[in-house]
Image 1: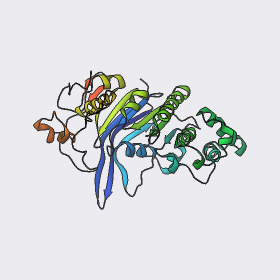
Image 2 (image 1 turned 135 degrees about the vertical axis):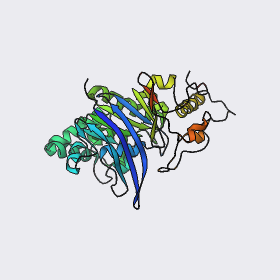
Image 3 (image 1 turned 30 degrees about the horizontal axis):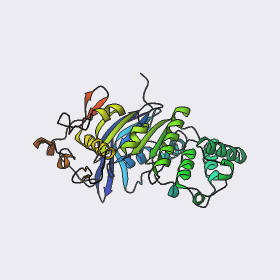
Image 4 (image 1 turned 135 degrees about the horizontal axis):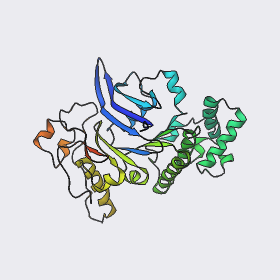
Length: 331
């Protein structure tokens, strides 16, 4: 069998606090095949974005660092690459669309110049050819009147258009892997759907694999092939998208799905379904299952014994001592 495009095994990311290191991500393993879309799902603080930044080599080494594991990409361990080799990969074979395009784009540089800079840096293309390719890329991501827009500055574009520019920059060199960190945050529903459709179209057209980070299960349903659910820095469930929605094997996943299904039939006077309590603070050590305090199905052992992340069905893994159903969330 061919090796996956990205194979992450036993990833641990720790926060430095004085002489100590507090793990934020624990023993995380997953793979992405060429052309596949994998969604990392979880609420804020679950470890999604910090995992993406570790893969891109963008963690602040004074505060955060990978302390265990490996991330094999095209025969190279991303966690062990020296800075110069990581820079050669970043933007070329691996690219990232950041959550907030206004802070990621240079406010005093024209849009076309920012895209062209990526092309020139990695390919040594002439300025004229790079500018022409920048316009073509804006066309590719469906920016209207691309030639005129290429001469504009970020503040002259809407949030949706700025996100399209970020995607154009990310796919400029036809990367093998595109990491998108909450790419639809702060966009209205119509623009969100357009951006997701664009990412999916580009994936199919260019053969690029996608690692999409989100807390929105509606987004997951739109684009994912497989889903990895994180909670407090650990994987709690992984499955093909249809399997996850139809038959969740972890109470946390089931509660998330139940919440969005309730919203679909929400009527005036109804009470929103919520998950009581809150996630442990990042870096706080929990002896057993981190979700136990919020779980309606917790057993006495859940607070003291960490469940294994084990196969429950073909291609379906979960870390729970219980077996479903959980409140009828699946069907």
